[in-house]
Image (cartoon, rainbow, N blue to C red; front, side):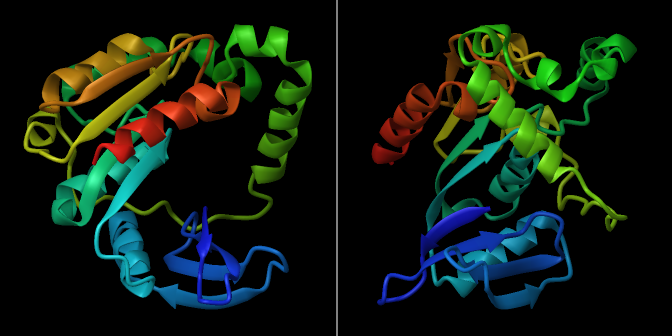
Length: 228
């Protein structure tokens, strides 16, 4: 979900494309849905249609975790609309067999059996910010689906490292030094393929770098997009 000013009156609005075929726009203060648009296609098509709806020609795209899958797919599908691309704490959805084997070595049965906060929050954050960790757990529980969900949207592209080598959009890659889903060696695999990309490791952070180290995350992202 993203927030933005919708009109000249300064209405603070939100856009949601998560779990939808298309997108919805609503008033952030009241929660009232202002519009809902159906788009038959892929997640990248939803985002592209949202930018058309908002009359935004070119923009900076930031995707974290699973959002990084859509971010890569969008950059491959609609590169001319992007001023820059940021992908953080994401395994990226690459389909190369050797990469999938690396993923299997990371996501062992013991790893998957751990609680979400153990998998996603770094140990430094759990120790130093217990109230923040508890708030994260509350949000994670709230976000769990309570009913049957529609099938996940597929992607326009079968993402491979060879395909990522075609990306020329200015790209920033980020991950936490304690991210157990996408540790620094995984990020460096992407950095080696995306020409001219910048790679940053966030200290004392796990898979939720924007939550665990918001000042470092925000400063790094804003400085990067400010140059593009």
